[in-house]
Image 1 (cartoon, helix red, strand yellow):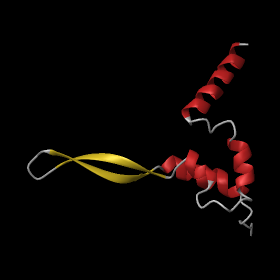
Image 2 (cartoon, helix red, strand yellow):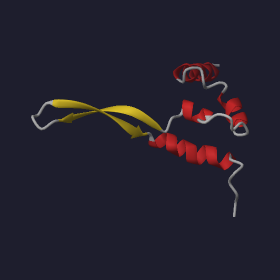
Image 3 (cartoon, rainbow, N blue to C red):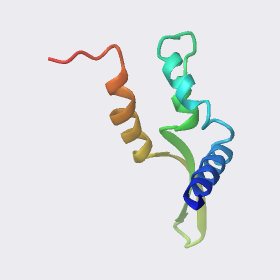
Length: 94
């Protein structure tokens, strides 16, 4: 009984953490592969591959300078290659 409560709590917390995109993710993932009308796939909204990240560097005078850069999120790239591509209809097995 305690493990079921733990499972439900984790599902609800993950759903809240992802901004309400966890519970309908499977349905949207399945049917967004056939719908090519959107430029950005649904998966990229939930698991983006790049993000803006601040970098604190020291300038020539020794003061801290703030630079905005683009950071690559490697776990989301792995998610894209391992989970999304085997279910793609474009891929052929040789």
